[in-house]
Length: 187
Image (cartoon, rainbow, N blue to C red; front, top):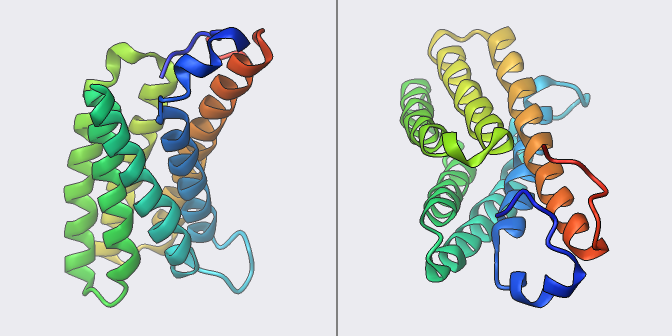
């Protein structure tokens, strides 16, 4: 996914790029997961995000990833398919033990750390999304292992910020490409 506005005349050529779909799905899922982890909305919890995480975060990201791999986009294809698998697994693993959940989060933090390292040359937004997601997963794993609810809430806020960055990035790319001018800056 490019950080540059390509203009409305190129809309057809960029239509085969599922990067925007993937970053919108990742952003909205992270935002919901993060906000529901914080207790920001009364009488809700992270489990309330399970259906959203399964369909939008799991299925949509996985399909967008396969689409990107077919286009030869190795990084976004790998990122979206693996994160799609993460969200789909997380959404159905509600009964996991504390240690299993903590290990699950740590293992996926390793994946997002790899994505952060791989995205280093791709620009600030890419580094921010994957770096913040990595930090959120590590903090959440520590919170799960140690039963630290305050740390879990902090991890939720960090995930929400990562979601906002991903959402803004995709929205900016979509609107800048279709409006023919830079309306939402990305640099």
